[in-house]
Length: 354
Image 1 (cartoon, rainbow, N blue to C red):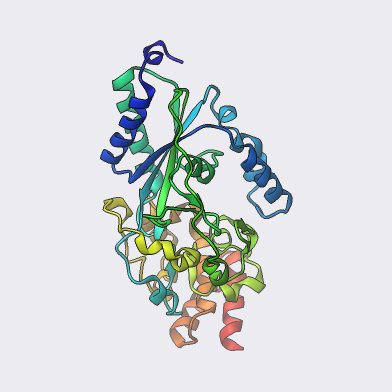
Image 2 (spheres, rainbow, N blue to C red):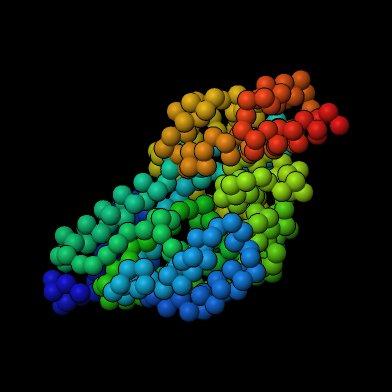
């Protein structure tokens, strides 16, 4: 620990950190210790079951993920912060119920959240330095092996819901999480109780039955995994179940009663771009690769690349209402697309021709 911070009133600093965090646009800030032993056991079981699918990095960094001091030596506490992202957007259920439209998870309809959170967290750390002098720390925003939900739950920001996302009684689950690992011995906050009770709405609504039990998700069946993390072909038996969800899925969040309290974000970067909240599948499928890169640059969607984006849209078109426009769109790219996309186009055309 740096000498400048050794005699500081850490309880006062902890209160100040939460105030500064709110001033920087975070809706809540909490502090946790680094004991994730119980979570490490659950992670090992989840990995052993193969529920991580092709996300090999989950297994590769398993131990580091559950031991903050292994990721950043000297870490004593983790400051967790949450920032609302819910955009002002078209009604989600209405879009999902319109098979000719593309549903995109609401967190991804604006700009990539990583830069926003990383910048704000760094500003928070800099504010702390101005107060106490240099101290050991590192900022993370879904950019390293961090058990962010477990740490946020330990810090009192909410509890892990049965869909495995963090839930807050006053904010639901439409928020991003970020962390500051630090060597400061700040007082840790107390966790909050689980308020899911007997509710099973998230399990019941999941289109692919990826939530195989309370607090347990088989990523291999999760639409978010299938449309974002999976690099190859989407399993044929799951394609019809995906419907028009072309990037991620919000069904478990939409069904959750606690999200009635979720507030619309005031962050400009999280607002909808390019009409992605209510776009036609045919329109998006007509984009060229250059148009995809131009329009999706700076968004979370850009990282999956044009090929997987096209693959997902082909599945959506296969589930769309049969029409000349839909069939024509699919045939227009049947000869020029990559082998991966062509296979999904072929499946989609069979759905309409059959």
